Length: 215
Image 1 (cartoon, rainbow, N blue to C red):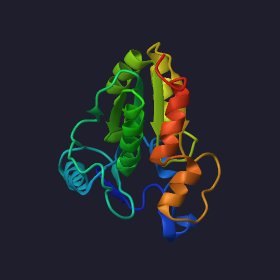
Image 2: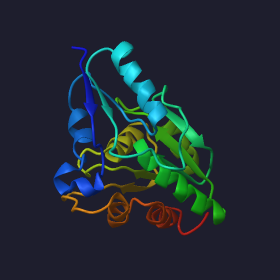
Image 3: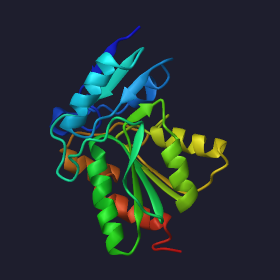
Image 4: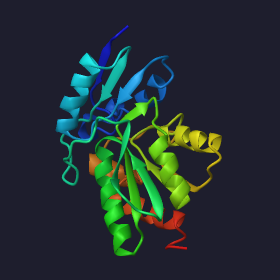
């Protein structure tokens, strides 16, 4: 049936406490047949995706949005396609979704200062996955970092890697997520650092994937 689920407090929620983190829904919603899961990265995208969920997409739809604001580095509206390229590059592919895209953009800024050109791909829909942009990018760069506020099991990064292997594409890969355990209480900024999802931590991990520089 055409049911729209509004999933509030997606990802890390900070002061709401450790029982309120939305870290598991992305994995289990993916197992529901016919499900579509949308992930806005800004208020403009949230409005547009809710309209699409109600009026355009058949079957069950979930729209995941975080507690709080949209961030400072990304305020554009590009949520109509399954995925989109925010910044072209040839050295490493950075993939993320939702407001965590802000941290990935910060990571790319730091990499650019080192002469490393990162291609940033934002996933607007994580179920079903649009593999085409990711496959095209990784085939070019040979390196992949996926950042997400999601538990490790059946995370988007794992599904992307499986899709790439099915296409015969291999890459040096880092999957950055919240891991296999529960995440404790703390501010969102503190928890980003704890989980290695802040821009600086992603930068250091991306440098490792790149061999600490371009090869």
